[in-house]
Length: 348
Image (cartoon, rainbow, N blue to C red; front, side):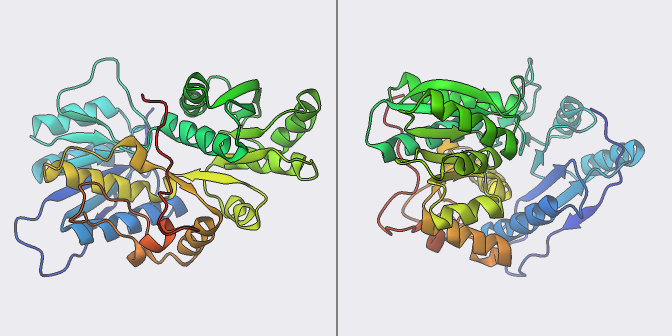
């Protein structure tokens, strides 16, 4: 897909205490600098880069093919130590090959990119593993029912949508591991109203339904509306962290939310830091996802509302090699001793 681009360079202002040889990162994003998601992405990247001692430049694609190519050329002339590229540019493969020729390794972020022939210089896909997110949601909801396998209804996006299909792979993995038994897969096209309509009918056909798994938070809200008056009410959850979904979790109307995207920038910068520091490569897929408890949802909603990015914790703790970007007070949840992400119990 081609993007006409006008590039905006942002150089993060770091503390004067940073060493002269601090590693430099370049981040290439497809959207506009003023877009809400990108404003947050850049702010979170700033915070983590500063905490970890790295310099970073953020490049946006803003409607000019010519400027796009000019700025890639400029990046080649002043190469960073590592480039993080969001797929969907004019030609992601061309970006990787061009930067590789300049000695710059590249990892893809935000959206999955899996070329048939991996180009030289590509470190791999560092975007969240959506199959892992789907699996974590299914296992969490099943655990709440006390049954194994738990009878489930699943709500998906369009049948050929890559994101939905990836999350469904995690759902099917949970079924193969014996956590759930899927009664029916319903295509709700990411829509809350369609999910509500489909679930209203489905629970009549399958009155023993114990959980409803939704591939996004909007469909989870639709399922919630359809089942609020059922007794017992199926455990219901989705993937995402919209303000409405976080509010529903806080009120107890949703039982679980699995989140990653609000903090993708932190995950990307932490992964870059691990690679640059030879700490074993990018974050494991599990660490990109957090299963929120009710109290965690309240705290994350406040964090996103107030945009208090200084609360993020991106540094590598001395006690372990893997960190998590959520602030400790968010991760603490209802039980400060508990792990917010359930372990993979199927042995895979």
